[in-house]
Image (cartoon, rainbow, N blue to C red):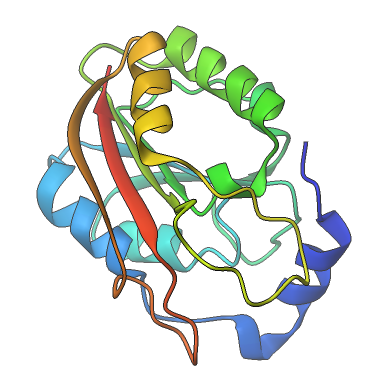
Length: 184
């Protein structure tokens, strides 16, 4: 369930919010975890900037979001728990902190059931050690240790985990982020 659908529809309709370059996280996971035959599902793709980057790099990409994005190739508007996640890379940038914990549990359960063996789950989300200065929309700050434990409980082995600032500095915002990579 998306909590701020109206907020995100308005946000992505504003052309000033359509960044054309990939996120640092997209570059990081592409360089460290993708293989030449990777098939990526970009969950919560937003404006599609990372999907477009992966596609330009020659990968097959399926882009998902609750907000309609007509300009994207191979896009599906859907709820997180209503999709078949058969791919070897599930990419979730800024999704986990945007959903409530019940939806997160349903999503991880769905991933645990759908993902193929040796597939990779890539997560970047806001840390509970961050300070939120803007309250214009819902954010659930995530505890790194709790996320690690939860993913283990759903059958994922954590192969990378870190938490720091400097990964996504935009305008005056430099959030404290968690990066976690799990292998199924």
